[in-house]
View 1 (cartoon, one colour):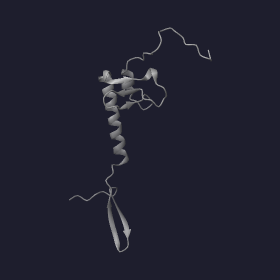
View 2 (cartoon, rainbow, N blue to C red; view 1 turned 30 degrees about the vertical axis):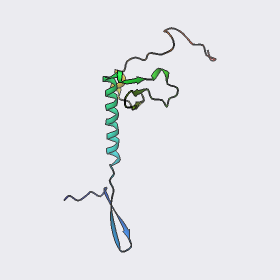
View 3 (cartoon, rainbow, N blue to C red; view 1 turned 90 degrees about the horizontal axis):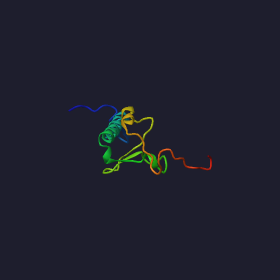
Length: 110
């Protein structure tokens, strides 16, 4: 039987001896890599199957709302500095809702 590495086991002092405490935790690096792979898989699915995703870029009520949301699973993606460049480049151009090309909405600042 293989002995565990030091990061997976800690010893605690108790009255009359020590007790081995096993921790079943992934290292932060492993969980970060796993999360990054999952997110890249989501981006790949968005690029390969855009009909399975809601494109919310043009009508987001706030920045907290996702840019894309999967219609079946509800998983969300936001375009940002950590988004894969290949995925952002492959996205279709943004079509604004609620207006035609060349029209300008009047605001208090204009």
